[in-house]
Image (cartoon, rainbow, N blue to C red; front, side):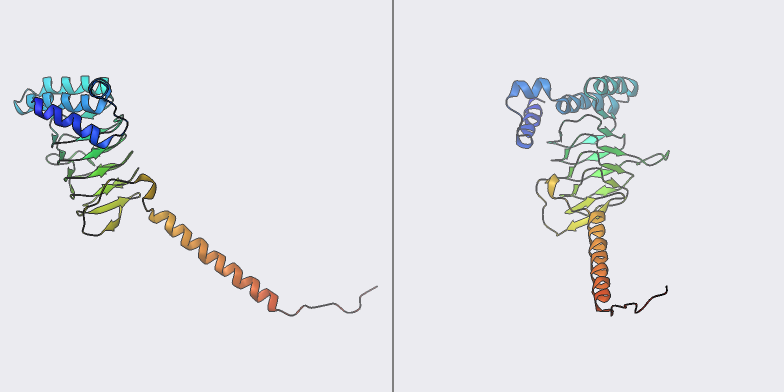
Length: 222
């Protein structure tokens, strides 16, 4: 248990340059508190002590602003950065080395029973405000852009942005840390292309107008 706790703390140092010391991390990082509380709640959940598990989960939610259902399965070296507003559903499965930012939802799409929440692979980064909704898999080494709404399967080594989520990068190699300021946006790219076409049409129209002969009126009516 203590080895896992030490691993959790080291994961924060590896992912958050603002972390300055063990005391600060242990006592001030809500994502760490939520993860540790979830492990306790999940143990009771597996023992079928469902109500006690939910009570622990709700206390953790009140204290941290992070809601993790006791039934969710979470792998090793999991880190929630900032964390406020994160929601993780009951049948969600999360692999190893996964990084979530604040406002992320790993939820369902309706009232169906059984597996209704996403499965997140290893080495996945999900940025602030992203929503991953439904029973499908987000492949290993993928990243989800800020405020994206993902409703379908994501292959490994992919980058997804937009509403609904669109795959904008899939190169078959491991994707490194998410660079929030360099994510492509297909909607903005489309508008840029349209604006370029409008500018070309305007320029062509101006050239045609310059070629027309100037008509002058000779004489006049008194």
